[in-house]
Length: 188
Image 1 (cartoon, one colour):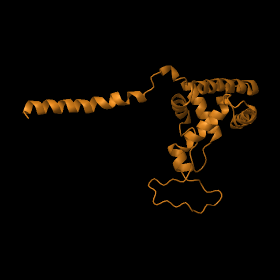
Image 2: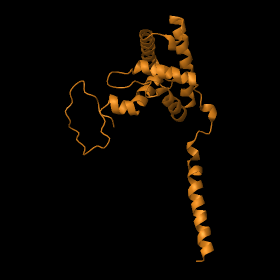
Image 3: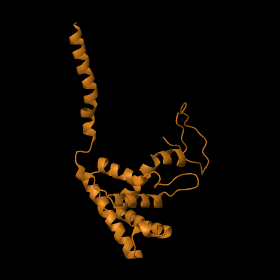
Image 4: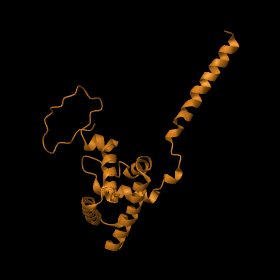
């Protein structure tokens, strides 16, 4: 093989290595920016709701420090149907209205106790809704909020390493470990 042919082949190969990953992975990017429906204000609200559901403790960070709002934005956009996204978005509007109706101010300005009381009432309504809803009916927005908050938190670094017991490099499998009530559960 002549030197020119070798150099040409190498250059084409290097160009392919540089350009191929971008074109192959472009399908992973969101093609529809209009689906990015949560605003920065929504993310702040979701961080606050998440912190009310999973607050920081002496031994672990809460949902706000796990950046649950940012996680929800990505997870909702990438993994939930348009219908569920609409339920979620309308639910945030409803939550803000409920806060203003009951306490005369936005959820973010409520005291910790007021936030807990409001979310407890909404959670009770969500449970009643699901016990009476049609099989094919949409989920209650607060059920979605709780579901994503719990999933997002316990798969985040603070949730998995501080709230749960975590072994970064596990040894052999032992399915018969002693468990004392009150111990942290194991992260997967």
